[in-house]
Image (cartoon, rainbow over all chains, first blue to last red; front, side, top):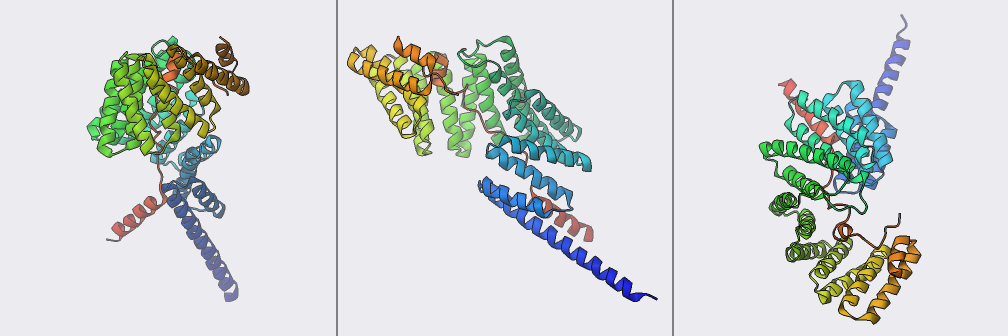
Length: 368
Length: 46
């Protein structure tokens, strides 16, 4: 009887089990640390831990799926969409292979969002549809609502991507309007569900994007109604970033309704919140909008005040295009006041910046 | 891509057609998966 051989084989099995066990624990520890880092917003460090976890490896395919998915999301937040696409694809393939339908729905949703950002709208639509189909088959209302929101975002982005520059809201080519109308339909379908579920946070997001869709469609009263709802919900949650967005979007809609005073009040709220949030770029944008609103109100002194504020921030941020726009606006405002010296000074500054940035159309305007 | 500083009226008041809400990404959490597994194994022991 050869007992020695079986003892050796048992030891080898034990060792192999021990190595695999250590690997699983190590992979899990790395993944959990990656998860913790991503939760606090440190996506770069999170990526390192998740990638290390993959290097170590795991035999638990659910863990692997979660790692792929979170890596995809981390790259998405880091704006590395090619990498996000790669990992969400891995996740989709894996979930399909193991027949995990809930996981497949999630992977499809994330892949759809990534494809949308990359401008690959037709492929994004396929992913959103798969997400929606699975959610419907499983009678998962939350999943359905999320898929419908993503669908709306894809059509909204598609509409904006077709033809944007120069045209006024409500005056886009038919294919743009069609995509935007579809977006509105999906947002409405989403709202029906999230209202039923009593999910106020989701309602807030959808009202915000629905408001922007109505704005682009030229339905400015509907845009105001949606953004008012968004504002209300943002206040409920104390979400000052969302509140700021709503005020800015409301200001834009009131401009197109010809209610310039009301628009100015909303832009002032935007400015106040931008300062509280210490967001200099948004502060600059709010000053620019206020400058333009007071120009429409023919209050050129105030317009100049805000355009100068915009100019200072643009210079601080080294935003030459913003600086050029501020100079152009200041030139116009000083002309309206009859202050030709200042008007000439800013017109020359504008021309100089246009030459530097290679802005031919701005250069031609400046010469006029 | 350099944007023109001689802006049209629509570009004056907004950047790219209004400020959008964030995307909602689906979350798959390793810790939640293990919590569920742990609860599942405890339930099956009872």
